[in-house]
Image 1 (cartoon, rainbow, N blue to C red):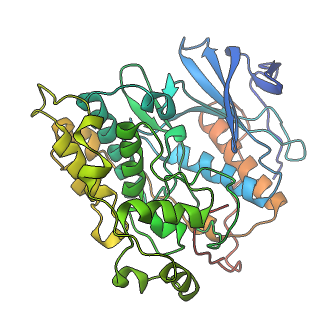
Image 2 (cartoon, rainbow, N blue to C red):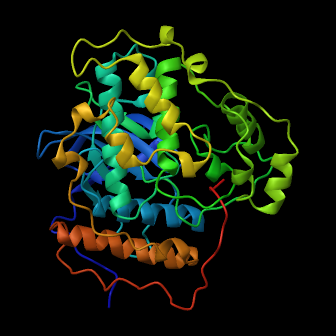
Length: 398
């Protein structure tokens, strides 16, 4: 079957330079302005002249540079198509200007435009209502991802966006399941300040790995600075145990032998009580409404989220039912219908860059066809090869 397709209106694309990057987008998108860039791509704002809506357009950054980039591009696009929740960024449109597999090199994702990321919000003085409402929305979004079998493991303020009315959306889907590295003295490539101890130490993890990240973000909202700003995995671990204390022997026995021998041979720390780490003076005034939200409630929630041993850490559902959070409870948000399950097989498969390129191209064509952008039906998607052995890793990506 041919990989070539026909646009209903082939002249509907136009080139435009945004910052130092050339975009080639549908003519319906005008007034492009750069708003940010990251490991996964360059983002600009635009106006959708067909709907009048302000949108963000993300050009995936060199998705076929290597297999890591390609797998990440596939995963992001696939998950954005699956997930539909008010606290997770939604996909409004997706397209490529190239019309053959040989030419294919760019993927554009169109999303709702938000006003700021959480890094900017953290610098503001938040009252208890705003802080607990932001945390509630994070937990609703996380719960929805978990219902599709997606555990994030890399939540951080830069990947959470908000609007002026305090509505919040999670912007990305975290680490692929098989992404891995070793516990070693390697320099930071990305921010790991918010990653849970079990991710840093290459341990097995479960859903509440994401609760640790929410705790780090909440602590930063209160303190106004990053809680555990490690310079590498080892320094990160030290920053955590200096404040929270060295975990129990039971925890140590669950570590891989090489990691355990290192961790057990470091100085032991008693840690500090949460009243000392987060004294009343750091918190906003007690709320006059919403069950009188106060510092004691906030600190209690924080003390149950920032627990080094995941076996003793609060769950997402327990956090949503905590006194500091449950004032916002809405079944349509907390218990929204689960998305179609994400097939994690793709996270275990090692394709060549060319194979990934073909898979992603067909996914984009399928989306375009479903949304009436092209006239030719897309080719049948390629199933992952059953012969490919899974790749086993122990921890986060690098």
